[in-house]
Image (cartoon, rainbow, N blue to C red; front, side, top):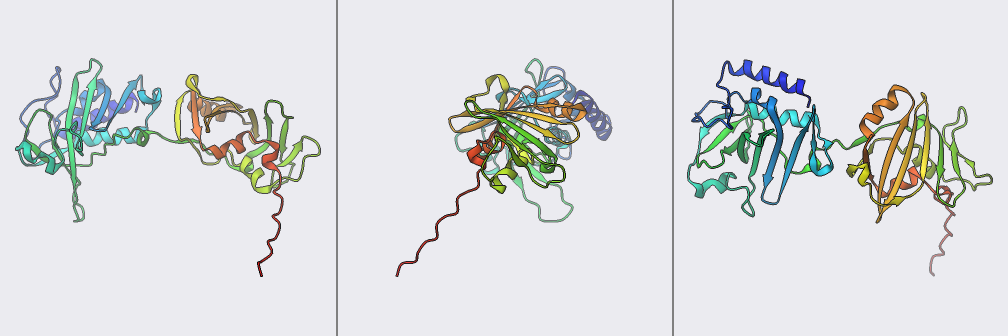
Length: 340
């Protein structure tokens, strides 16, 4: 989410609340809450200074940090979070409206899911939005969601301010997840297999392996080494599909890419695009580094790939850097003779 997006969000919310009071500069607004009012009047304007978001629960936590005009996960080396998910959460927080005052008895908080989020077994989440100095802009304990079966009825959730006993039923959609994996956009690339024209694979102490698609051919064929055995059509097609709907399992800065090199492959695609893949093998896991060349498309891909190493499924190693034996047609199995 860029600074411009936050500014637009702030402007829209200011208009919607019609001159609501701004948060005090020293931290969260401690004015008395009332039924029907916003949980955080004037929050959108204050979000311009937001620098960190924390989501905590008893068994883990999430931190999202601002990095210039973008937001990322420090636990993943600053990898960008899904902008639409962050936007949905912040908009939901600015629009959250208190519907009913509920219990102020701490002994009843667990029933609504707004007890101490640090307590073992608690289902509560603590959401904090902090400025650059670490001062809270907004803090809220989020409890159980209330299911509404009627049509056109807003979603509702039980909430409580930290250090206050009063719990509330609040209306509005507030989607908050403490699992860092749910904040990542796992898409790496989606390049159709028919675009792949030529693949050159280098592996240590092995001859160069080349697959090429002759003009007009539907499939890649083994061009080198000379005298290569008949290929397995499915295995060769997997090489062509190496970048089709490619997603990652994990991500980290390329400087911390684990494992040892497992070869290198250069994919030449249509429209002047070339992609070089450098896979590593780390205790059975496969990590890859990607580099694109060739025009604006390559620039767009590199803008996403540059500086990152991606863990992919172990089966992808045979697509990105196959051995010649990986592509050989399988020997037909001998027929079994039924027992008398």
